[in-house]
Amino acid sequence: MQKVNIHEAKTQFSRLVDAAANGEEIIIAKAGKPTARLVPLARVKTKRRFGALKGKIRIDNDFDASLPGDLIAAFEGR
Image (tube, rainbow, N blue to C red):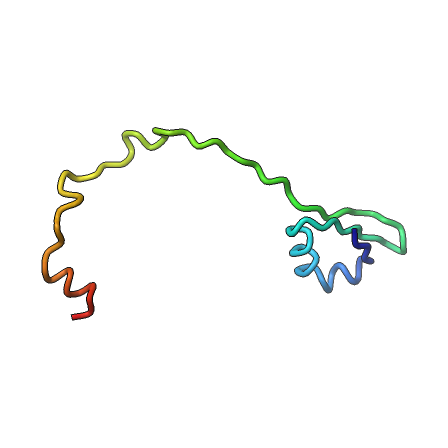
């Protein structure tokens, strides 16, 4: 746990946010008295729902067909 005064927190804000994102807790003090705490956000894990995009995506029947020769040449830089 790190304790910093408001002035230092203002000048080092980006560094303090990075430290908090990495799991460190930072106490911000005003005139030596703790007034705020900077902590990392708890990551919210969302469950994947299979079929969530059903009906929203369409794949053509020739999706895996060979590409035309001129397009292959363009990808190869010819």
